[in-house]
Length: 59
Image (tube, rainbow, N blue to C red):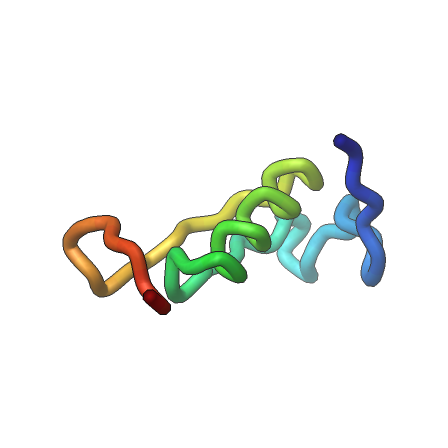
């Protein structure tokens, strides 16, 4: 499976000359999908999740 990244060029550095570091709030489907895309673009990130354990939701 391959992904194409749309939007700003991920190789662009911020004004300090570093790659941006992304903070992802929530490890749901959207947060994990974003993490996968950032990893493929070699952009550093951290994920914060308030729930102490993984559980099924939406049942």
